[in-house]
Structures are given as structure tokens and as C-alpha cells.
Amino acid sequence: MNRIDFPRRTQFSLHGLRQITCAAAILSAMLSACSSPHATHLAYIVGGQRSVFAYRINNRSGAAAAILGSPFLAGISPSSVVVNPSRQFAYVANQGESTISSFQVDSSTGALTEVLPRAAAGTSPVAMAMDSGGNFLYVANQAANSISVFSLSSSTGALSEVSGSPYGVGSSPSGLTLSGNFLFVPVPNFSLIYIFAVNSGALTLAGSPVSVADGVSTLAVDPAGKFLYAPNPSTDTVTAFAIQSGGTLSAVAGSPFGTGTAPVAAAVDATGSALYVVNSGSSNISQFKIDSTTGVLSAFTAATQTAGTNPGFITIDPDGKFVFVGNTGAGSVTELSVNSDGSLATTGTAISLGVPPRSMALTQ
Image (tube, helix red, strand yellow):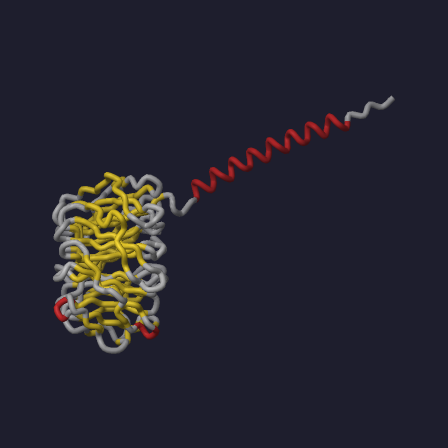
């Protein structure tokens, strides 16, 4: 009589299948964790005579680990740094020699290698901005009263000044804020905001510059491009504007809003629900809730968070988890975490540089 062991074979097959499925699930999870593009961010900070400090930031803990070889050398008096979205190239404005340094970024280590020669900018470049596609670089030339525009080679990162550049502004531009098809340029000497329409790198002045009665410093725009916020250092306030079609600005009801002493920079969180204003005079950060419909500001229950001495700039990491504030008086960068409601919390972490930081850029 023939033996039939069908049930046993079926039991063995199912058991093996479970083992294979579990192993596959574990392997998939491991691969997913290893390949996550947001496990760490590369961070570059410029300051001092020629330094570009480089760190790898853990996106879960916020811990910063110095990259081997840091600090790297740029030109004289580096004032601003940006990184191409591809993470292949970094650019540093050298205010003391009116040039732009181009660096190749090592894809595995994050180390920088400068590619010479340096590109000529206008006199005393102080700020830069790059479009989201990494195709154009905009440079504010403080002593030349102009904005230079460069196109970027996707293969080499080389800079080429576009036809029509540089573009004039009234006097001493102090920053650049690029939002969609508009470039906003603060001019503190005249208390004006210049607005340029952007088309494939070319700039066209969008109407007359907007006057800010209480002075103006580095600007912030929400991610949706609906509202613009201008810190007013002379009156310890921040002016809020709604951005209309064509880039024109109209004041938000109740504006300006009170801040700490001598606000000099601002940033909006990744969700567009919170505004952070850096106060150089009171060494803290004013934090506001943003009404998504009107742009009106209201202070969080904890209206401020402490920074280091004389903070000068603010940078938010690409995932919106951490905020970094450069302290010119302390020679450091303070790290803060973002709560679920958009308010800030201390992490107890500060990156000590030993020189006044002037700008910071983080990769995706």
C-alpha cells in the first residue's frame, strides 16, 4: 500500500515559507534604514578669516560629528555658503576678495575640495541663494549695490555669469530670499525691499521697491509663498506682508509685531505654521504662531527661546526637525529641536567654532 504524506509536506512548506517571509521582511527593513536619504545631513558653516567648517548631523539625535579635514579653506572673509541640491557642489562667497569659491563634495565623506579658479563676483559679496533645481546662483554684492546671477554646470559645478548680470539695487543689499518666481532683497540703508521676478535666472524688477517704515533686515517667506516677514532692528519689531500676484506686498493687519531687542534674521518652519525671529541684542529667539489664512502672528506660550551671545542667522534643517542659530558673539551655533506644535525646545547642544559664524547650509 502506497504511503501518502501530503499533510506533512504541506506543513513543512508553510513553515519554510514563514521563515523566508520573515527573513525577507528583516532584510527589507535593514536595507530601508541603511538607504534612508534623511539619516544624516551634511552641514557647512563659514566664518573667521578663511574657514569652512564641515559636520555630519544625525537627523534623529541632532548630534554633530566633525568631518575629517574640517575646517576647509575658502577665500578671504567667507560670508555665505550654499550647497547644490545634488550634494555634489558647495559654494562660498568670499567678501574680502569679491570672489565665489566652488567646492566638490565627496559623496561618501562630505569632505570639500576647492576647484580653482574662483569666480569673480561684485564687490563685497555678503549673501547667496540658489534655486530649488540647483541651476542658478544669486549673489548680493554689498559694496557694488548689485545682484550677480550665475548658471551652474550640472556636470562640473562651474559658474558662468548670465547675460544681463549684475542687476542694480539702491544701496548695499544685505540678503537674498528666493521664493518661487520671486527674489526678495532687503536694502537696510534705504529701508526698502526690492522684488525681482525670476525667469530662467534673469531678473526683472517687479514694480517699485517696498518701503518698510521701521528698517529692514534678513527676510523670511513661508513655504507656500503666501507671506513675507521682515525683522526691524531699529524698533524691535517684525513687519508682516501678504505676497500678492506679481510679487507685490501688502501689510498684514496688526503689523508690525513686537520681538526681542534688535531682530536681525527670521525663518519660517517647514509647515508654514511658525515664525522664528533672531534677536541679536537680547540673545534670544522670538517664536510666533502664523495664522495660515491672514499671516497674523501670535506669540507661543513660551514667547522666546535662549540662543548664544549676539545671534546673527538662523537655519532650519531640510526635514524640519532642528533649528540652528549662529551666535556671532559666542563663536558657536546653537541647536534647537522643533516641537509638534512648531515651538522650539532646547537640546543642550551647541557647535563650538571659536570664530564668529556667518552662514550655514545643510544638505537634503
